[in-house]
Length: 343
Ligand SMILES: *Cc1c(COP(=O)(O)O)cnc(C)c1O
Image (tube, rainbow, N blue to C red; front, side, top):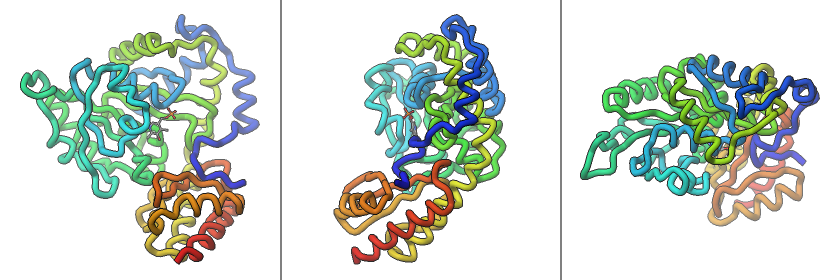
């Protein structure tokens, strides 16, 4: 089976398992797990922030990032397909008392002016005050599009003036900086909090790190405990994250190459299904003839290729470190065969 459903399906490598087995651990609720502390410091430093907080999931890291700086009864703004609003089980409303409004991108690219046009000034009484703007980078449901660094800089300047915080849902931020050659510490200059997922393309079995300034991360640490996310000898998992940051970041460029190659093959077989030029990172979204997504996905699975269905006519393919070049080629050929048989 070549599994392109998600980059979460990776198996920890032997080296990663060894690092986990050998990790020094302590009780992290007491702040005494040296491996967790090392991972939090390393991630914060990497992203140009003061402090970090290890979280079991990306959803919790996003929730804590938003909750720590968005008081109940204020709002977070995000794009219409944002994971925080569409795919986190309503957590921000249900658990943090935060409301939301959305702007609508036309192609997944991030436009700061569009986001800023929605801001209600903090302290507004007639309107729900905007506390936070959340930007997803890369934008998952748009096919892994990268936010333009210049737009993020504009957002930072204008939100600083308006007293609005910025959260980056960076589940795949490493894909963004590898794709554009951006220095990771740039993101610390344009956001107040960032979540970074270790269990997507980076290949760890579990974990995300939330980074920000010391005060915001201290608030998030308290909230993590409140939500039942205080963990004990969890350095065993943090060790996998450290290993991932050390070994699995630069190689994301290979995943990006594989995704582009798949997109080129599929565009040749079915030109309306995908624009290879729009594939920037490790995600390929396929638009199929109306209502054919489940048929294509079932036929692909029979031929040994698993993909995920985003809608009745939409499929998503994600490359990752357990798919090598020849498997990517095989998957593309299998799917190309199915797509050309449809028309
Ligand atoms: C996967 C993902 C998350 C959440 O990660 P979980 O670990 O599954 O909770 C958040 N944001 C984006 C954009 C994602 O793709």
